Length: 94
Image 1 (cartoon, helix red, strand yellow):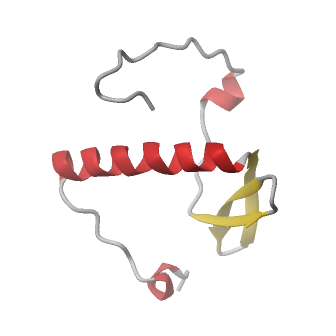
Image 2 (image 1 turned 90 degrees about the vertical axis):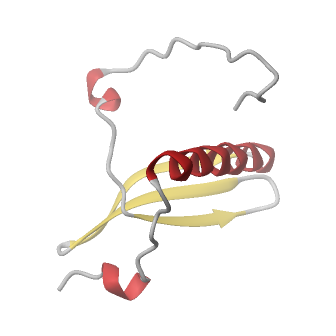
Image 3 (image 1 turned 180 degrees about the horizontal axis):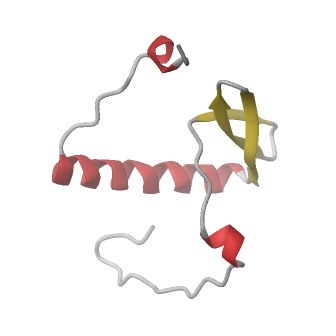
């Protein structure tokens, strides 16, 4: 989330093998209170919806997350083209 005029800092992150494999999520729900945001990453399957991960962050961090995602989404679309958003009704299993 470094600004363009600042040098990016490298951070070494250690994770167990299971965590480093990552998780797939195709649905997200957000709830909030005055003090925190709760981001539930879900997997919607024909067998139902399953919680993949729950991340709880402070409101200020949510703003930084949104800024980082906005910047990276713009860079992605500049490189690979515009992402077409699928209508929510088309995402259901048939």
